Length: 460
Ligand SMILES: Nc1nc2c(ncn2[C@@H]2O[C@H](COP(=O)(O)OP(=O)(O)OP(=O)(O)O)[C@@H](O)[C@H]2O)c(=O)[nH]1
Ligand SMILES: [Mg+2]
Image (cartoon, rainbow, N blue to C red; front, side):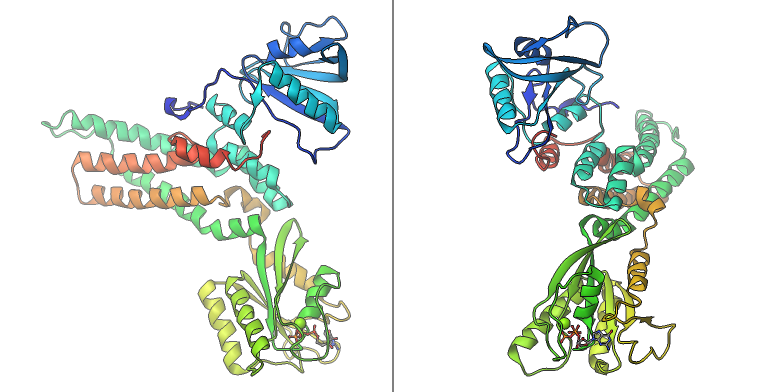
């Protein structure tokens, strides 16, 4: 990948390491050193046990030896040496695999400092990898997403993106656009004559393809975000319908208070649940009814808030706990506005079966019957097949860039249709290329890079 010359605002001549974190206790701990002096610094503090030299021969290599702390041996360790550019950062990299003692790690950090390395900034290893063309910007972001992944869906989305994902499609469409744009610009040099180097029909088709992809990706953003942060699910219904009992059954835990007093749940109760590699954020709410109780009314306000934020609404019915027509209408209206999926659950079916089993998931929350059906319905309601995860957009920055690209593409389409001057057309095409290029990092400012990499933790 080509890296634009203006994106490197750090001096690439210094060598960095990541200090140990206090919580980082394990049998083996790795400290990574990257930069032009990585091998020199290592030679000062590391004495190989055999006769394998650090600096020559084939790479990557593993050497066993002693880490020296002056006259003393600090630890016996393995050193993994990578010769740039064939390393994660693209620079010379040495990884010390020590015993996982917090003291050894801390002391090794001090020794590396004494020998001329400095502490890495957050995300600096990955930033260097980007700078040296080892990763594109979207891949660097995927590294961060992978480290943060808590679920299989998150891990898969990150992994697809790390291996190219939708960015690969965007990059190739952008390249076609840049090529055609160059021809449009060339026409400007022949403005006296009426020439047309860039095929207008090709341009039209390309813009259409690009817009279709951008729109598809933007449509997937809501599910992508939900998968990333946890799909918000509101459990709503009349008091005593068994909402809290259902929450407990789903969580297989005694999370919320249950009683036969209508109005037991006052405040919302939130917990998360993993089903089939997807994280759900379950919110149990106060039962909906008209009430003169001030505190209960405040709880019901919160129920409506949870309802508005939900992507999935678990609407719990029970034979002895049905909602007024007004309140039912309010749930339906909210769902229509937010486009949330409504799952109707008929609870207490041990007492009375549902009036129509096509419209309800029959459940007995108390007996744990039918709860697996609710789990299945939740997964289906997420509506993202794992095969579609590769084209699911979960990155806010990409979402915004695609929005700007779409606007510019629409203007470019208009320029084509109305036969605007070549200058105006070229300008809009450049805008499209710029916004698409921001996603992959082909066109990107220092400010954006700073914002992205500062969200990494140190050592990544
Ligand atoms: N027979 C039967 N009773 C149930 C079932 N699920 C819940 N109940 C009973 O219904 C009553 C109300 O249950 P909760 O879970 O507290 O109901 P809720 O919807 O959370 O009520 P509020 O918090 O007041 O809005 C309790 O006495 C439960 O034991 C069920 O599947 N069958
Ligand atoms: Mg309750």
